[in-house]
Amino acid sequence: MKSKIARWSKDHAGEIASARPRLPEVLSDRAHDNWEPLLGFADAAGAPWPQRARRSAVQLSANGTGQLSYGVQLLSDIWELLNDSRLDRISSKTLIDRLTEDQSKRWGGFDKGKGLTPYALGRLLNEFSISIGNKRFGAETLKGYHRSQFDDAFARFLPPPHESVTPAQSKPDADLEVPPCEVGPAQLSEDPSQVEDYVGVQL
Image 1 (cartoon, rainbow, N blue to C red):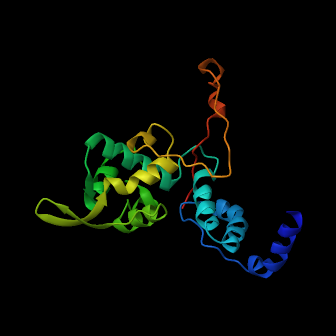
Image 2: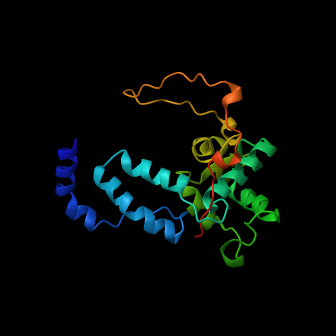
């Protein structure tokens, strides 16, 4: 294995040295600097590593402020909105109006006070492979999103209870054997410091 890694590194040294990988916009400048070389390796390794690495970057990177990243915060607020309203689809305009009218959220003053725009909304959601499209709303056809478009991102990037929107089915790697868990309720840690922080970034 050691010799294979050394050979691969030698064969791809030039490619990695000159790599300028695409960086998720929801990450901070500092996170970009930290992840750029790792994403360069992932791109050189080929599928499925580029997608996995970028997903990990969005999930794990933090700026130390204790706030959710803009992207993850947006997902969380959309989950809350859809869960409360029980809508199966929502127009872009309605989604923006609902998000910006809540003064407790950051969206009214987003982008130096300009507020959340359709372009900014689309840019943030694009990081989670969620694209706007034409949706039927009664007799009208409007630009918007279907609830199901968010389910995968909810399950991947938000902590419980958000995953309950559409439970994700775990598919362990075929060559990875995971022993059954025999830990009883009394053995589970209740230390909040052991819970992963979903902290944020600045655009």
